[in-house]
Image (cartoon, rainbow, N blue to C red; front, top):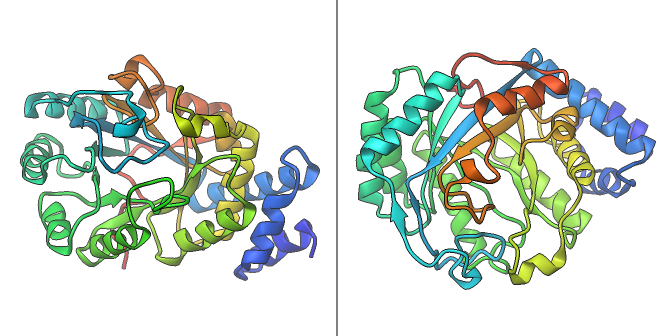
Length: 333
């Protein structure tokens, strides 16, 4: 089946098979077929959102060497990028969150490393929730949690979480795949919407691996899926594998949008780029504080984007901006 035929099949509402996703991922990234996929993904994303993209914003409560030792992460103990733990105060957290609210972020994310004290996370999160407008969407980005803790996250005022089963989970990370899957189920059973992603993509990942992950992310009706490339952390063992181009990333973002059910409105990529937006991404992130893709302690001094700069990137790719609380994390019937 040709790429044109697969696109028509998708337009007719039929689900695509793993083999068809592999075929779309296999065409050269600079081929007419790849550009057709990007154009179709762009059309789908704009149709689902009325051509209005979202920008979410994340700040970190702490920075610490992490024993999960994800090979791609600057927090990993084995990577030796950071050797001490630092935390921000509740007052600083409130300041970050309210600034993002003023900037017009469609959702505010609170991130911690996997070993951050859960009670402290809830305590600060409740302060943040009280400081924000009742309509502002608050999202957690934390480690794997039990069903009881997932419920406590919802009760603290969060609408959802970001949680991903990473590529080669359990091999390139110290976390068993089953633990990530259990956490996703626990979050959803607690009433939290789960945003996810095909990530972090490197040159070594096969098209079959990517297709499997696209199908997995679409299988549990997330708030959004999408795709993100691995950002090289200099000096780490995994850095020798290299990094894919933005053009290849755009192709994967496009195939993800086409392969995930239309009931999933969001399609993210990270880090923000115009090629991603052109290929159907309708969600970027602004960031301050610690960032697992950065070697700077404060990513706003390094790789981090602002809400305004993310919107500019979307505008350059022909997107408008949604100016209200996130639709992706809105309650569904």
